[in-house]
Image (cartoon, rainbow, N blue to C red; front, top):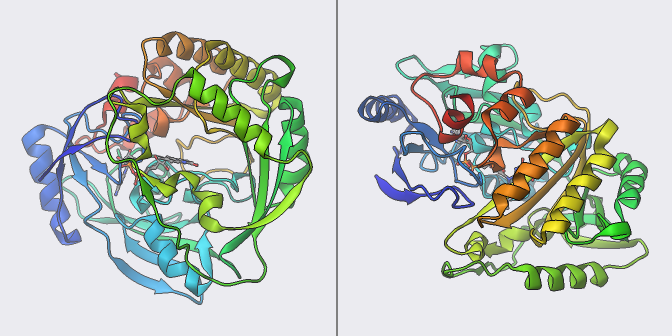
Length: 437
Ligand SMILES: Cc1cc2nc3c(=O)[nH]c(=O)nc-3n(C[C@H](O)[C@H](O)[C@H](O)COP(=O)(O)OP(=O)(O)OC[C@H]3O[C@@H](n4cnc5c(N)ncnc54)[C@H](O)[C@@H]3O)c2cc1C
């Protein structure tokens, strides 16, 4: 038993008691014991979800990292079969030298296979390859008091679909088989260009997204007026030649949690201005390692500590394509007026590849994600942003959420009832209790 697991944002500040086992065959007994003793439990991957979706309603979680073995790899076909606690970083360490990369990766490699399925994560190539679940061939699912099941598009297909983006509620995923994509180099050929406002972002996205595997933009969340939504647009592709080397950059570390957040209006404004100016106004090509391209924040371990003891929340929403421009303008205007926000605000247009999961977050439209230090003022700002997203027919991402109302959730995710019908009654999170009650 291990005490003191949290979610990434450390808000809500609720500690989880971790229960673990070293072998898949011991998981049914562990699950039964914890659920029977505490009424319910929840699988917990690596705690990279920001809010309360990885926190058990009982605060007693099944810690999955201890199921972390590779079971079978096939470097001809590019498939990996591994226990659900294996992280994406561990897969890359094996697969890159063999010329394979993750089909879809989120902005951190420190997530587990089980967690990547639980939130059906997406990445910079959503416009081309959809979500993580689109590349999951099959997985093992364990439900309280039942024999282990295999789920795939053809076997137990209802549980397969409900578990992808199923927030850990349908059962414990014990092993996973995924499909990788071939690469010739571990480096990325990327093109960067600064843009002056939201209109330019949408023009660049329309022109460049379909020409490149990866596309994303950083935006200055404090810029106002005709500069609203200015930022840096970045596209990239796996280089066609070069080495298949692992990244060897050493990691930095935030050693402790300061009493208050180091992010404030002054530091934020100065950083955003400097970052924007540092990037060229004309298109610039560069070849970079895969780590700084995909995982800039992973360089600093425990970076979440800079937000101080009160923690932080991420606001990630997506609004449909047809209204994306005016809705984003309104959202960014409200954020700039509030003077709050984070260094790394990310804007991304998602495509129309249908997700394999019933409750996946992406839809064809534009997504915005940014962090906010936890303060009393946040409630007012979030209420304003929620109203804009609701009006636009958009939705918030459960993986990042700690505040969404039940009615907003149920309206934005009408398939929630399908998930609830297939939920293992012994698995429930603080998030699910909050939005479904
Ligand atoms: C720096 C950073 C960048 C990020 N960028 C992105 C991004 O670009 N795109 C994106 O989509 N997300 C992004 N995320 C969010 C992150 O990818 C997800 O929250 C992911 O699900 C976390 O995985 P985890 O292994 O830490 O799982 P946890 O956060 O511990 O759990 C996530 C969910 O999966 C369930 N779960 C975990 N393991 C299992 C299992 N074995 N069986 C069944 N259910 C399980 C949990 O119950 C929970 O509901 C980012 C997070 C960080 C910190």
